[in-house]
Image (cartoon, rainbow, N blue to C red; front, side, top):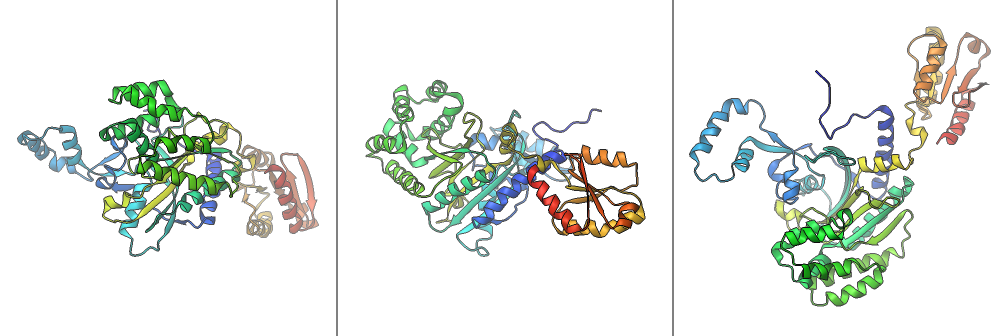
Length: 471
């Protein structure tokens, strides 16, 4: 038997986990600095919680789970008889799924968050700002940057009133996170109401709205011509496509593009509202400097999820804008309605940890220090020496310096090789000679230099100073 893991999943080495943990810690710190509080939700949700929220394509990618225990053993024959006797059953596959599955792995963190808010509405304080860093699962075709199991890092706000300052805060949050990561980004922005206005202006029928947005969202991925071909196939006329494409093709700045659309959407109330919202965001962002973020109006951005209602966002690397997105989000002011909680407004952003990792790795943005499982290795000379050294080990750990003891008194060369193989930059040796002289001997394994110290505080100072060179 050949051992393997399911396609679209991965094992992570210690080096990879150190980098991933660095990303998570950086993101979490900024989430908390912006006032978001953590929650967690189960990996498994009731299937009715998820189905119907993502659109037809999203629903098809949900990992559905079989009933627990011996369901098939007890019920399978009865189930087959039901199908045979039920003459009205047209969609056998749908009927089959409903009978054998009532749970699913979560597809994203947004729907479980809204479900959580509705269930705990009497316990939480609104506006409710939460962050969540957990894995999600999608039955997608695995390929570069697209996995079946991956982590999302979400920050969302649920409240009883809608404020565009929430969008501005989320833009600022993204800018702070990617500035800390030294990772320049483009943050695309658009508005679903502007797209509604374009649909009205172009004479596209209401029942083609989902087909229109699904195809339009592929503009930057597959190009203008293939989007047009796809829309024509779905029943959108060439004339309607050309009316919309005219505005997408405009390469001017926000103010000039807005002027063109203000004229075109003058008879659309939804379109005018979308333009007012984007105008508010742009005019206020001008007065709040962005560091590593370029805010760019992308009129083809529509986001695939059914639940978006207003502002929509997508994040791509500045140096590789043609790559797949590394984050996205938007406003979903009606999502809680589907769970029976009205007049509740939501907006959020989701960062794809795995895609950010891959892009940063390709740009060599991870610093070497994050490969170190420990900063210091204590060489093991014997039980007596270790007991003497242990007070120093504990002192270093209290000072926040990751320190490990080699477990056995093996040959010294073997212990140093262990440190080198694990990228540990410093080794401390305290044998009988050092004990007698009351000295601490430390070796810088990268520079291959060695020095004796009189007291532990000098060792801490030296390690902290040398670490700056590696970080």
